[in-house]
Image 1 (cartoon, rainbow, N blue to C red):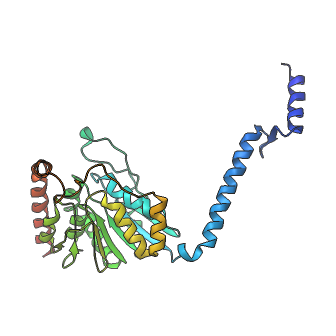
Image 2: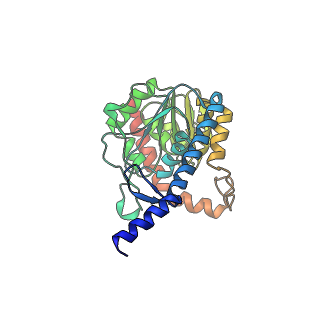
Length: 292
């Protein structure tokens, strides 16, 4: 087709509405324009709904600080983060010493999804509405003896509105001196270790003691996040977040706690993690000695 015929066809198409022009002057199918209009309409509906339910979703600006570190368990971070990101009017800081991506220390054994921090310790706001620490192995044991991390947590924890954790993250809080005299939970393997740090080990998916909120192992992070969302905003908003995430767990097995799991499963995992529990206990004893 020569250029003259192509021009005539393009002109005819534009007259019939089959072709439109973008701001840059390029010709684009009308379907793209329709898709853009549909997207704009959906966004407007979203904004309209937010305005109608402003009394439900509005609240003071929240500042949330979430520690990230090498060797953490990704789900411990992602579960609460999914909930926090669903809140309106908030700033979320992924905190570490540098802005270099963090990953698990055992690279040869693990599939990695590096997490890029957004804020260095030195740039973290002085006051946080939420200070959060995830768990994970082997990272927890390392963080329990990292002076810079512990000093940072102790400093921000003294001023934070809520001091929180999921899984073995509570051991890091304890090593920073932030759980002494508080009821707290952890992963079931390390729950008893909390007593070495002056905390009161308490079984529970979520344990709330004054402004300390700790979650159990790994998947408890979503439950924890919803509980905290209710405290930060209100129950109805937290329920809306739950529906938005379609968090309606129905596991194929009822073996999610030592009390429910079959004896052979308990025995298997208890033996597999015996060395970890011993290492955590020794780290906790060293932390307690430093604190005292």
